[in-house]
Image: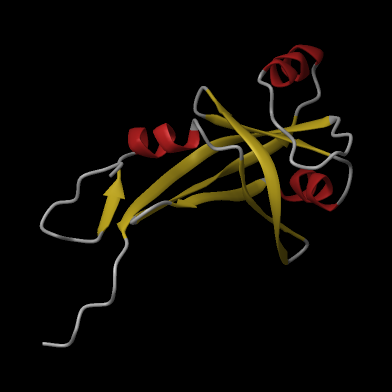
Length: 143
């Protein structure tokens, strides 16, 4: 079990440190963008570095939406044997443009899950981080 639960509660609210502990090993998640009155959700490659999230991407919709909107949410989760977790990060995203920032992002080693060229980097600066840990099991019977 990753985290101990109090009072037999199957849901545990994680601290920010516990949430970052999980994000530090996360390589994939979902990015939520908002631009021109529309929400969009896309799977992404990600790497947590110094309590910020780095995304490596191709030109396209998500890159444009980050430039237009800036406000984003990111969600990662995992289902394990008998337990699960979910972490949501809300914050501001920007496309990295300066050579030093891009070199640092490249050095982070963001793993790609598709064999496509990804030459753009986005950085998410969190405003809010929220995580939950779940003990899995059957629904209890009515009393």
